[in-house]
Amino acid sequence: MKIATLLYPGTFDPITNGHVDILRRACSLADRLVVAVASSEEKGALFSQKERLEMVRAEAQRLSGETGTAIEAASFDGLLVEFVAEIGADAILRGLRGGDEYAYESRMAVMNRMLRGVETIFLPASGETAFLSSSLVRQIHAMGRDVGAFVSPAVQERMARMRSNVSTYSK
Image (cartoon, rainbow, N blue to C red; front, side):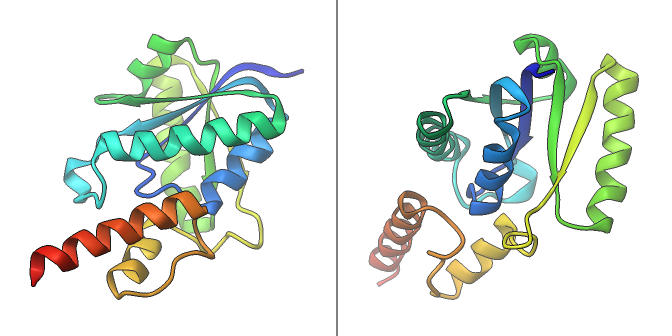
């Protein structure tokens, strides 16, 4: 039995190959996937919410073409459970890299179930991407290193343009 609508929230700053792997694997679980790009003023994002949404949309469109699953991208502010209700999602999808993430995510899952009655589905990261996080990619990028092994070519290009623009302004 497939889930009608599965919501995959995150800041996606930037969207990584690990996020895309979770999405690809979730395609077999749902008829419709919605990737929800959260605002992240408190996290000091590298990219604006609009830029992150553009990158997620491009990855979602590519993956949707590959898998045949309807994958949409949207942005949201506020409580996740309010957005769940707004789009009519049946469950929340979260990827897990390790035990410490499970401790945090399981508390969030309980709270979301208490607030809105929505369940959370956890997918463990693949072995190839279990080490990968957006913050790690941002750190590597900030040190001027190549992030091509961790993000799609389109995201890598956007990050390179950003570095180029910063270098131009800092001279």
